[in-house]
Length: 214
Image 1 (tube, rainbow, N blue to C red):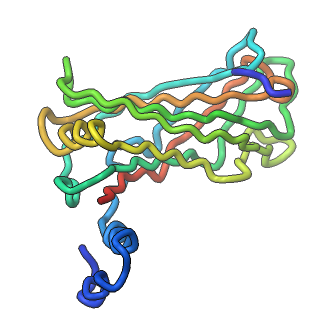
Image 2 (image 1 turned 180 degrees about the horizontal axis):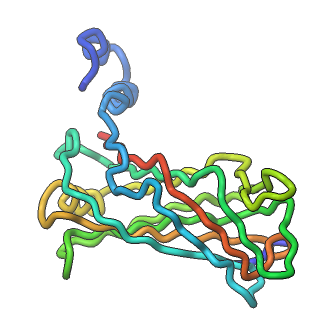
């Protein structure tokens, strides 16, 4: 029961007129380097306590980190800047005293919200981005005595900045006050017939990158 809770080689460039505009843009985008861990969220830990007294039990937790200004390839020509962030494939689970550790459990509506801010104090630029993996994603206990659970599939969030949000993000990342800050909030829903209310889930973020696209 569901509950709430650059450009490439000369050969590559010479070939561009021979293909369609979309294919040419794809080739160019593939050669624009991503910026690894631009927001400095890799290895950050989020501990979510699953809420009680709801049809769907939800957990959410946020973390704030700072990151420096950086240059972005082709910044003046970009159509979007995609922030990719993965969840570690393994999480740590603690259940309330007296409760049984489940063999597995699903999580759905996994959402990563990013608030990117310029500098400290009263920032002049603030951008909010959000990405959701609908799921459900099943987490399975790695052994009968372990509190470590492994995801059956990767969880990768893609927060896209386009239009006005893109221009604001570029203004924050490439100039202005330094360092900048980002708030990352993770929320998840689960089926409380498997995961008891009050359970604690410890997630880690890794493999973050920012990919410029024309």
